[in-house]
Structures are given as C-alpha cells and as structure tokens.
Length: 256
Image (tube, rainbow, N blue to C red; front, side, top):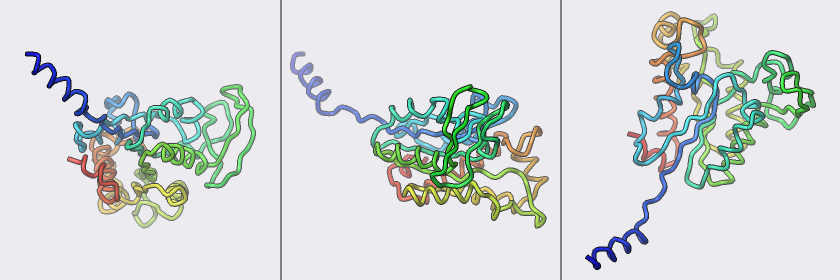
C-alpha cells in the first residue's frame, strides 16, 4: 500500500499534464451574435468554430461582442483582462472592421476609428462616456492587439472582415473598395502575424451563387450583415481553411 502511494506521488510530481492552449477570439457580432446561442437566428462564426477543433488539445474562448469596433473593444476595458490571461503557446483570432466606419464622436455609438493604419490621432470629449479620449486609426488598434499578444508568445491571426451579402454591378462581391480588408492585410504584414483573408475566401463562395441564393442559405431575413447558422458554419469553415494554410503546426494539429 505504501509503495503504491509513493508511486502515485512520484507520477504526480513528474508527469503533471500540461495546460491546454487557449484559442482566444475577439471581434464583433459577425463573430459572436448576442449570447452566441442563435438568438433571432443570428450566429457568428466564433460560436461554431469549436466544432472543428479537438477539445482535448485546445480550449476555445470567444470574447467577441456585438456592436463593437476595434476601438470600443479596447476602451470598454475588454482587452486588458484577456491579455492578462494569455500565455505562451496560446492563439488569438482578431476580426474587426464592420463597426469602425462610424462617427468618431456622437450620441448614438461613438465607435468609429480614423481611416488607415497610421499613427494619426484626434482628441475628443466623448459624448457618450463624457470622458476625454484619444482616438486612433483602425490599424493602430489592430496593431496594438497583435503586438501585445505576440509579445506574450501568442500566435496571432488577423482575419479580414467577412463580406456582407452585397453584390456589385457585375454580380460579384466587391473587392477593390474594401478598405478595412486591405488595412487588415497591411497590419498583418507589418506586425508579422498570420493573415486569414476571410473576406476573399467567403466572397469566392458567394460569387458562385449570387445574391438570392446567398440570402436564402446564409443570412437572416433581418439584413444582409448577420449570418444564420449555415452562414456562420461556412465562415467557420473558411477560418479553419486559413489555419490549415498557415505554418502554425500546433494549431493545425488541433483541427479534427
């Protein structure tokens, strides 16, 4: 009995199981709609991506929240607590942009960011929070998330924003004027982190189907922005496709 107890103690000391890596996700309602449980038939891809990952190898934490821009996710105090939890060997998926193209300062949202990826800033007295605030570019906020996570040994993936169900005169999803898509690509290159061109991957699927079919299969009746379950599953599959194409073996091996 004593020998068995000693053996158990020995094994517990030298064969302590390693902590699982965590895949953190941040973004807007296209990544997590509402509580992430399909309310109003709206789903974000971050709520479904765990279906493609081995839970014995990785834990998924979807911290995306509807209505937030790259700026307000930070100013509401959501980033720092997450960053403090991150450790070497974890992963971070970032997708912002849909809510950044709003007014910098108003009484409705006050969530916009300055266009571009530079270091420009503007001082405002926020009409909603009633606090003084320095507002930066879209790229500045993405860069902050990427660089701070990377400094902790986290593998970062920047995703270009998913496309809406909006087609141009050629019956294709627009590419050239998708400024946030291009800026996200530039930040990923600048910060030397992984890029998943989610916009392009999904747009190719939509292009082959046309507006009516895409609307019927992938979007809610409410609008052409928020995906239903099938649409979110498609988007999650495209994220997984991007991970498979990356050089990050540890995360690739967690794919089912």
